[in-house]
Amino acid sequence: RIVEEVVQHPLDEANIGEILENAAAAVMGIDSLGPCIIASRKCRELNIPLVEGWAIPYGNVRVFTRDTPTLEQVYGLPTEGRAVAGIPEQELKQLGLLIFQQLGQIEGIRDYYSAAAVEGIRRGRIVSFAPTVWLTAVLMALEAVKVLLDWGAPALSPDMALYDPFRHRIPRTVRP
Image (cartoon, rainbow, N blue to C red; front, side, top):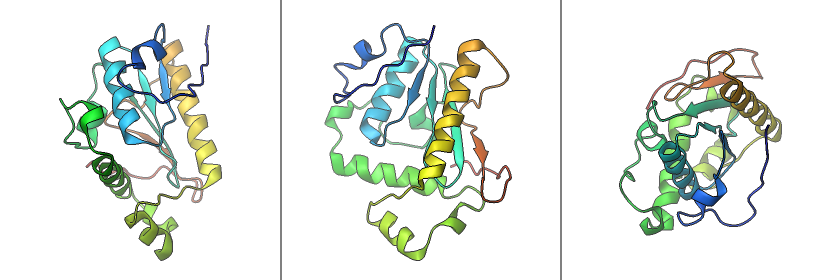
């Protein structure tokens, strides 16, 4: 049985356990780094697979489990062991941009950003293209189904499943 709950209140270290109570898997559709770290840590603690995706120009997804590198390890974040509530918002924003820059190392991805978009990203305004948001959501749902039903091979961290819909190909990833 799959139950969907949309959380409409701020996710924090105090309420994440309640949000994930009885979950068999979690799909992370969060644009803010602090809640991403909180969710990933709690999922690992509770042994709940966590499906992550980013709305970059490609459809992309990866799954974190207790047996894979953590989100913080994969992205090289200097946040391990720190309470998220104690990390300044400006630092979280800078780290979010660092992650986005790392994703920018994926083969061909920079071809889809104009000079104005790149400058906006440097200033902290991350852009996304609505159809690839939907594509990534579909890939995330498929990874969740694979995890829940033990079908196929999930895209386990640090690897990710990628699809370039503009050139109809699977791009090469570059690990940070």
